[in-house]
Image (tube, rainbow, N blue to C red; front, side, top):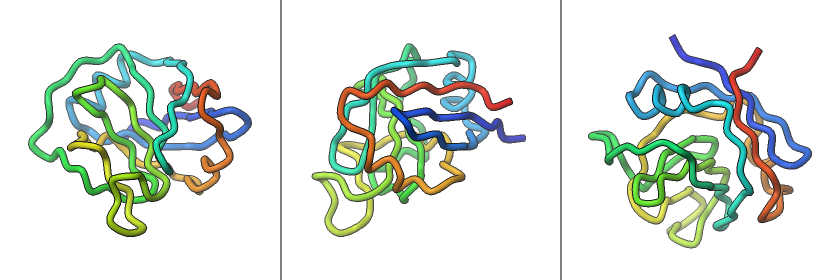
Length: 125
């Protein structure tokens, strides 16, 4: 079973689903979370109180709408387009991230969220 979460970033609200990985379950246990957004191209990330190593399925090449956990920065990442590390239109993390889920709504709406906007992640009703 996947768990539905709600991501609120500035004025934007999105539904998302977490996968069944150990990292996603640790993230779920830490909810609700709130932090200022850091923008890196079309990626929003911020540190969270979860500590996990790189997973066997960790990768840098992501898809638009994927959610990831970046072990070096203990950060939750939302990918919605190219980053400075991208070779084209695909999102690419700075280094491998553990995939933890996917945005179910249009993730490109996050383009409107400025650096420093408050991002809140909580269990969906």
